[in-house]
Amino acid sequence: MDTRFDELLDFPTNQTFKVMGVAHEDLPTQVVSCLQQHAPGDYTPNIKPSSKGSYHSVSISVRVTSKEHMETIYTELAKLELVRVVL
Image 1 (cartoon, one colour):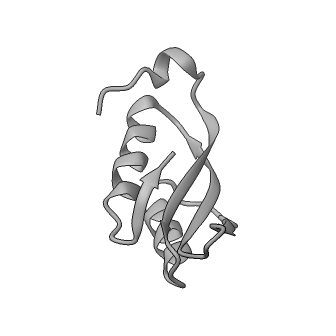
Image 2 (image 1 turned 135 degrees about the vertical axis):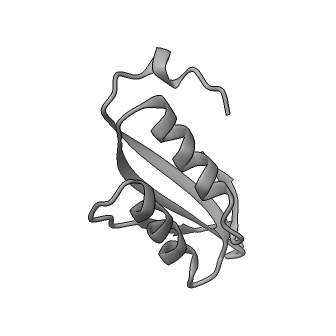
């Protein structure tokens, strides 16, 4: 992944990751578990269901320290089986 995060942001910074995935009870747990591996912290996910209830969005603010750190988090979250999109 080659992004321009370093041109757009001053690190370290707080970044909200919005993860959209299948409406499954394990989705928030998997997202938080992934984040704990790459940016340990005390996370409280904000979960919103889609209008039809098929998908959930999980938003979490994370302290990122560099462009590479942010890219790693995006990449690792996208690898989760229940995840469809990471914004």
